Amino acid sequence: MLCLFPGEIAEGHGTRPIIVDEKADESQRRALETIIRTLASASNDPFCHSALVDTFS
Image 1 (spheres, rainbow, N blue to C red):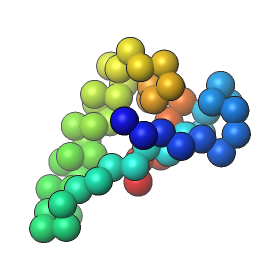
Image 2: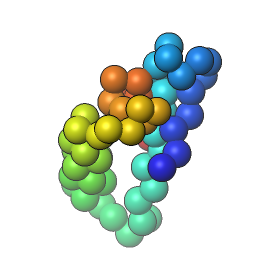
Image 3: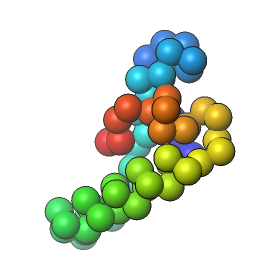
Image 4: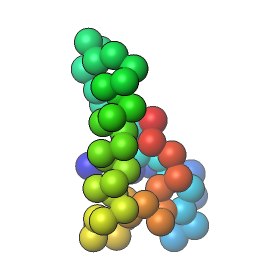
């Protein structure tokens, strides 16, 4: 899992890139983003937890 932070990790404001096949339509992309955000909010990963990651791109 890749998370990018503009400064110190503890400051948050991270970005987690989401790679989706180019064949996916907009509704499929939104559905996957919802699933990934939900999983992130329940994640025990201290570096990519939703409390630190603001943006999914």
